[in-house]
Length: 249
Image 1 (cartoon, helix red, strand yellow):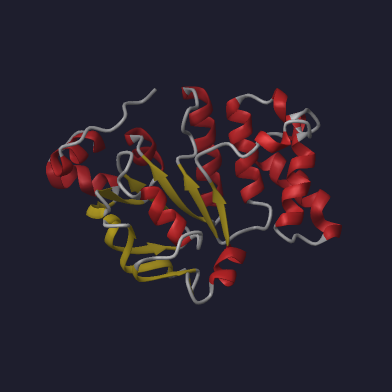
Image 2: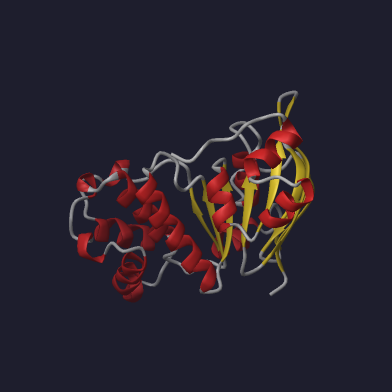
């Protein structure tokens, strides 16, 4: 499938502070690639540059074959982006189905396909039986799944997930993991930012550990643990950066 994300010396400064400092990424299609790091490591800033929401201060990046600055519109048409925060706040008086249909219009899904596409993605994330309930009645895990469904409405080549299980209980997290893995098994590429060690270990085909905006090390979870004789990614991260990451909830 080739590379779906290529970044060279990607950087972003806020004033005199470098949030991302010369990051290099080469991400193959059809895989789950993780950005693992603590809060403030530069994960969200990196994702916002790759999704064209934030211009780089330096370096280059291509997503789905298009430059994120010169061809931002082409990039946006090919990606789905699910943010950390649940996006349902403005939709509480609508049903899950109505929210999905409105989002489909925003993604420029053809009008004649909106209802069918909304039903398709709601079924994919296990919300068909709850589709006609008000969003305000959804649990936190259901709202996260609804956001995931909306990110899939236009059938993106690349799905970008920024801490998709943040704040969820263990059971909801595991259900979300199953949905993400099934998407990859179906051929989708997923870029996953997380600071949960167990999430990265279970889901990611490859990952990069980043800290202070720089890549510390990259490889498969198994490679990283084997190279250091470490029993867990927690230990790998601790040895490389001096930081501890979150334990499983």
